[in-house]
Length: 420
RNA sequence: GUGGGCGUAGCUCAGCUGGUUAGAGCGUCUGGUUGUGGCCCAGAAGGUCGUGGGUUCAAAUCCCAUCGCUCACCCCA
Image (cartoon, rainbow, N blue to C red; front, top):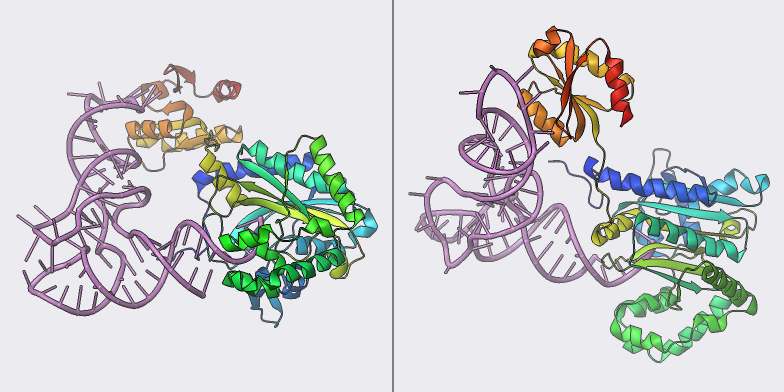
């Protein structure tokens, strides 16, 4: 048997309604905040991601789906969306059109990691990018927007964490201070963190090793190394959030894995999923656009993992039942009436009524059971003596009442079905 | 890349101190009188016990390998 590739999942019909519900909320909220949808290709030139996300990050160094196509171009399935959006922004010279672009997307992403709860190799994210302004209001708006969507979807067990990583010069001086602090404690660090000491020292903060956590509790704090300007930006973000009643926690251990972040970073975590608790993460990336060859342009954004959100929702019991039902089910009482049934179905469907009929040549009883399972509001019996007299029988499945209706006057039925 | 758990009907699982035709619940299908659902009742279909090898008179049950799933580390959404 051929099975789906490891880390990929089919989304079956019974699961679609929750996906649609989430997508609908995303679209409504994005539009409410005046973000415009953008769609970019599934794959890009590999260098976009290696330059954009950072050569040393795990995403680029070991998780990308990269291959060479027939024209020997190195191609990569997009592991995240920001680099693609920025590429499109630069390529289409959007900065010349207007100063600020507020964009959103819903798309699948690809990362070759070991799958686990809330983590797949093909997964779906929605997210937003505001390109063209350094205004801290937009930093706050990103958090507001993401939080708003998660809340609207029904999630409760949420926590907003924010931090500021400052600008590169501030971060570099912080990193060297951190290095100093850790140098005499190096031997006590976990093996993983010893590696991180060289590759990305900030990530030691992410360690779940108890000794590491203890050591890092005494480490210097990033906010002490930020300039007045960076701190002021951060203060404003916090004030805006407080002003609209969003609770948050400043977490100076919140460092993000992508290289391009500057100043504000944030995460919204859920206590309702497994260890992959970050439902959404983002922050400001003021240098990325220039770094990818565009005009110097400040920007901020976020991405949210849809599978994780769905998982959290399921675990919190906030999923909604699929309420879809049928308007009418046609019961064919004799095999000879098949073409009549088919004709009536066509007319009902032409009038936008959700109509179903039997394709398996089953008994009337079986057809009724099927109608019931499909939650049909009405059943229309075609056949028998009524049909010979020119009538079809309309049955209300909830009340059980039924009545004869002239078969050459389907309009009466259509009107009746459209009423409720 | 590293570690733990698990692979028996469509689904959830029982059976596993080796021993006659492998079970349950749910679901599916068909019936419960001529043409009518939901509840109830009856019956039926459906499984090379992940795959390959080994031990044995005998293996779903023990051993090895392999594949897959899953959770966690790592990383991140």
